[in-house]
Amino acid sequence: MSEIPAATVRTRVRVPLRFGDGYRVSGEMVTFHGLVDGREHLAIRLGETAPGDVPLVRLHSECLTGDVFGSARCDCGPQLREAVERIAKRGGYLLYLRQEGRGIGLYNKLDAYALQDQGLDTYAANTALGLPEDARDYTAAAQMLTALGADDIDLLSNNPDKARQLTEHGIGVRERVNTGVHATTFNINYLLAKVNQTHHSLDLAGVSL
Image 1 (spheres, helix red, strand yellow):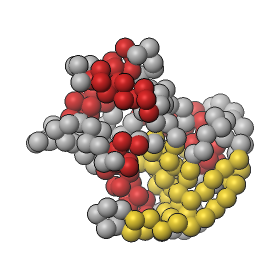
Image 2 (cartoon, helix red, strand yellow):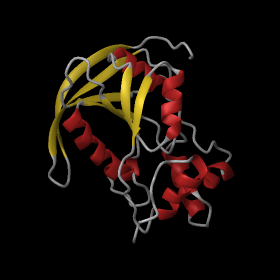
Image 3 (cartoon, rainbow, N blue to C red):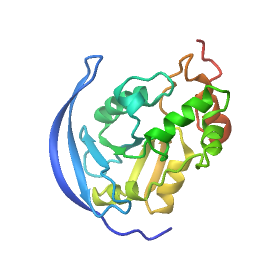
């Protein structure tokens, strides 16, 4: 287990959330001092947990194209919408992490999209640009959870690397809970690459497009 510096809560503010399909929920947005990467990551507390309950937590990496513009080339927007509702029902936190394009940034992500249009998968495209397949680091996420008192969690994720990194930083991951499968004709190869290259727990066997 690696030692990480402590972060502290900076601001808490309640914000009503509205989604395009009509779903509404109120969340408490939390900002932090002392995050190791200096980025403006955000935690959103949703629902209620009783003392002793293990919160449900989603680490969601920022995706402008999917979260804001509804791009069908990834599953990020639907995963965000699903996570907010599931966490609100159970009680826990959504951590919105400013790690666009698996950490390579928006412009590089769009460059990688152009290479994917030429036949490369999402990971090979990053490599062709001289970039990591996945540059995300979850140290700040562990700092945020510790500052919130969430030292033991259930993790809403298909990605085993998130659980591994959190555990290395002292966060107890009791269970990794899979999200739904949000497949489209535009993202099916992207999802297959996540299963084959980085062992995401997505059951694509029954997907019909």
